[in-house]
Length: 105
Picture (cartoon, rainbow, N blue to C red):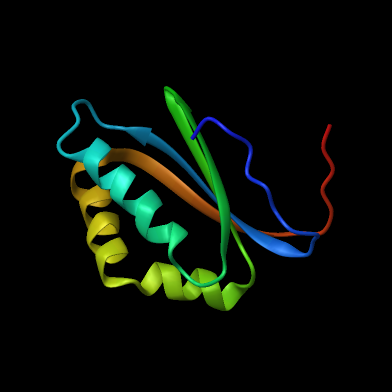
C-alpha cells in the first residue's frame, strides 16, 4: 500500500497489526497480496495502510466490530493466520481500536 486510506466520518474501527518477520519469503508476498484482495471484498471493510522497515505495521479500517469478527473468522484468512504463526512471523500483536475522530491535510 502506498496511499493513505480514505475513511468515512468516525466512528469506525481500526485493526492494527504490528509484526516482525522471519527470514525468507516462504510464500508470504503472494499470501499478503491475496489477503489484501480478500479483505477488500469483505462487508464493512473501509481501507488499509501498510508499511514495513524491519517492523511491519498494517492498519485495516472497518465499519464495526461485527465486520472485524467476520474477517477474523474467514476460512482463507484463518489459513493465512496459521501460516503466519508457523512460518512468517517471529512476533506479532493485534490491537483493535475505535476511531473517534480523524483529520488530514
